[in-house]
Length: 117
Picture 1 (cartoon, rainbow, N blue to C red):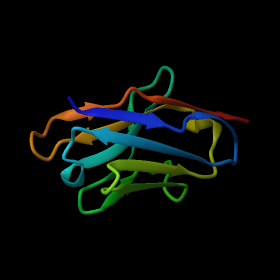
Picture 2: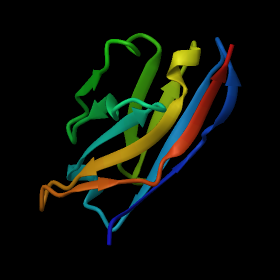
Picture 3: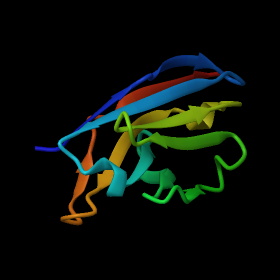
Picture 4: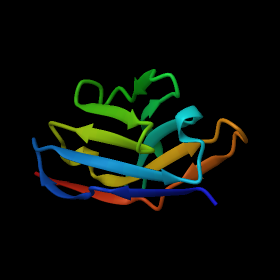
């Protein structure tokens, strides 16, 4: 069973930074598309950033220039560096993977990020 375990969430002041990490296991990581989604209270889950197996990235307009997604295929990890955080970035952040072999979607359990004003 594929497992995605997030870490790095917590409370941060507006304007601050936070780095989220996701460790994947039992996944052909290097071939998989990885992403971060978030869900704020009362809102739908939305894509924050994604990175393909070739390293191509895309970002939600709301985080462009502030967030950076990266992957380490040797360690089976994907990270999200979040800078210049805003209160509207407050959400549960989920790690996502699409298996390159089965095309099945996998989700982590989520990690809470709270940005105080």
